[in-house]
Image (cartoon, rainbow, N blue to C red; front, side):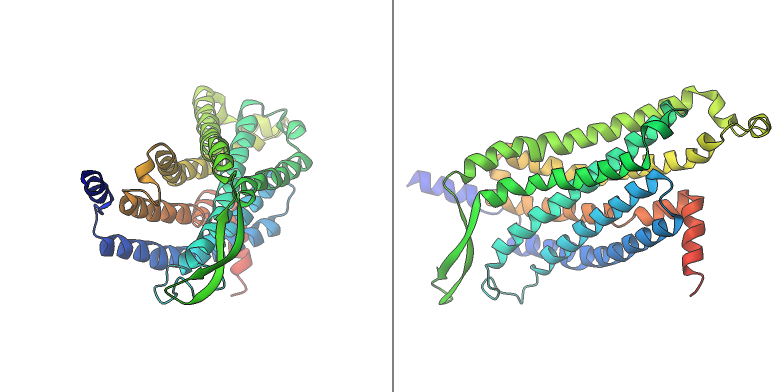
Length: 334
């Protein structure tokens, strides 16, 4: 009897369920939806602007890939958010609403990880540009950039394999609703597969990506600071001698991508930390004793990811003269 009482006390919500659900709905269904719709439009604009600039510069290929992955992340997040509409009951769809959300959120996490890894590649590319400016054109060609970005999309698609391999869809009778709907069922080996994949998909992959972003940005920062000649690379002597002035012109591009990297770490890292805590502390899982806290934290960190996928246009417009010129040219017809 005492054990049952202890379990009941443990399962008692820390935060009022109404407050937790209200925060989740406001954060995801309203704020994140508005930001996400705007983000989808701005990323489409990014693609059109980069297309107008052309793909002579490999960085435009990478930034286009980033825009595509951001659109995928935003669309999948929008679908998940719409499932929070209170009017949509659990059994109104052909599959249980909560179970459909599970399927959609894996797609969202796939695109978020692709975006992070594409950003890290862009950071590494600029790092090579700063450290080896004379060799970067021969090392990182357009073909290499295109191949790396396509490879990122294809290889990271394996992220979806463990969860989808561990489940199957089957019919389930809902007694209270007198309906039969599709539901997710886990294979007998599902828990073992997910536990094993967790070490890579939720630990090694995201934190490894953040480490690359931080190390690349730090290398760029200290290299620029140590090299006093960087600020004078566009001197009249270099112009008369016919030497390339690309390093000076690319300095803004380097700083711009450092900003994108910093924003990515700042806005995506909290979600990864939350997932890590959930993997270590059983009570912090979505069905754990502290699920109300997890719900609030998850909603807020998901909003941060939505913001991260939506604000790159402002960074590009503010810090890239080429982007700003092409953007204004594109919208001059209006």
